[in-house]
Length: 453
Image 1 (cartoon, rainbow, N blue to C red):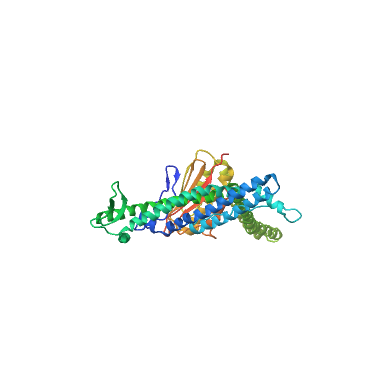
Image 2: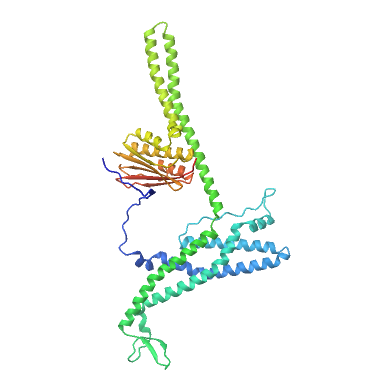
């Protein structure tokens, strides 16, 4: 039996990652020449003039609208200011996608009140003024300006001077050479004499210092770009409430689809399994009843066969009931239920459960059926010789791991059973991680919320 790798350390989950070959050149040396650095530098350069324009627009329009609030004109001017900043926000998101590779969703749109099947100008004005997203765009236009000025000045200065120093040996010839003082004039001293940077050593030292500055400035630029990412995400993206509502709507759809699929499966199993056997049993008993007066022995044989069919039908009903919610899970908890589940697997499977309590019944049920489906995959597809199930609690999370020494190659790609399982866990804020290189072994880790009874 091939020993299975253990991925549980210190009671916490350790997610396996496929080993990748590290580039020969370290990241610190690659950074100045990578396209990412130059894209982010371009983003900082373009951010300065755009931020100046956005800031001036926001301040002027807001001041004008506030000053006109004593009249009716102030309200539509403020609404126009908010509408303009939303347009600027769309431009900033597009710029972040192109240069920062930031995948950010569009914020929630303005929803004017519809009356008589249409919305008027006043509805749009009111919706803009009540939209928190619009005011966050205005806040971005104000806050991004000082940051853009600072990031532009620092990044352009450091980037320009560092490359100039690095490449100094290639362009130092443009300066005149004085007798006895080859090099460039740096500054004049109190006596009016010039001080020169000359000689091979000084030139090489200047280039070496420029190299260090180039390497360091590349990471400074990346740090500035990361701050821009945070500002765009926090102020120009959808609000946390809207994001959470969208997630809950998606999770609700997954839960409804899962429940409908389970109902169809139960109906199909009843129709094709136990119901068909019971119908055949009723027909056999009817034939036995007709034969009983004329041929008692044949009738007795048919009754005996019907008795066997009845046992099979009862077994199928028990399996179906166990598939809906096993009694052992309710009576004894997740650990014993998984042990009973592993005992029915076609592959020898060990179970290790370290739980200091019991989660909510719904979480127990989902955990049970998650392990059940994973063990079915092991028995049908993995060609494994051994498996193991580990269950433990980590803080407010319930952790499950199913391991096998099979052929590997499992994936959560769209259309696979694991993809549906990942969606089902996602509907309750759970996570499914699959580490299954070709050739094995396979480690599937599931993380579910722990909700006390």
